[in-house]
Length: 112
Length: 113
Image 1: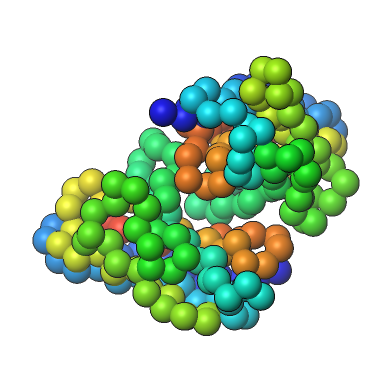
Image 2: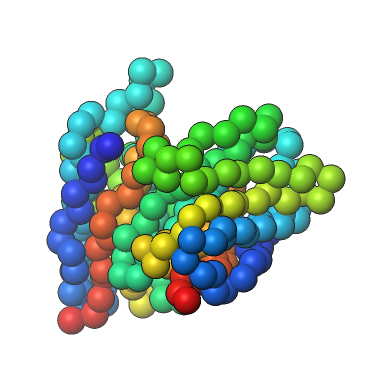
């Protein structure tokens, strides 16, 4: 199975700061069709996960432009500029290139 | 607006079967997309369990081997999860989702005698 390694495990932030989360894959996430199925989710306390970014860098409907996904191959990053209170929670990267689909272990974005 | 709602027993005994229903409104499950079950264990670990496609084909996580079955009732616009021979390791919050874009609220299932 593809292992997704997320760092850091926890990211203390001050509101208004930028945050950055890394996701590294044990193998390339480029599909044979040329797409890279790397996604980012946020799970806020008491809520179900919500899709933020799909195919590395595409923001899902309604996601603010302060969320920026980047990367290629096996190395990916989610940047959140100007963190707001509603951005706090656990972030997961997820890959749907290889069966079985797998999640990273999560990064908790929390206030300093 | 699509909505997904999980339902099922919150407590299951070890060695028994876990059965959950995902009821979908606002979209017909035969119209498109894959319809997945995902679970979140105590702590943060998430696991994709499998899906049933809009055409009815299934794809399961091999880690669940022959314990899992995902089926559907198109007349009720529902799909189902059955997990056999559960152990305490199957204690988790279970979510259904439409191609990971839309998720249910989740149902907590505890496996305990």
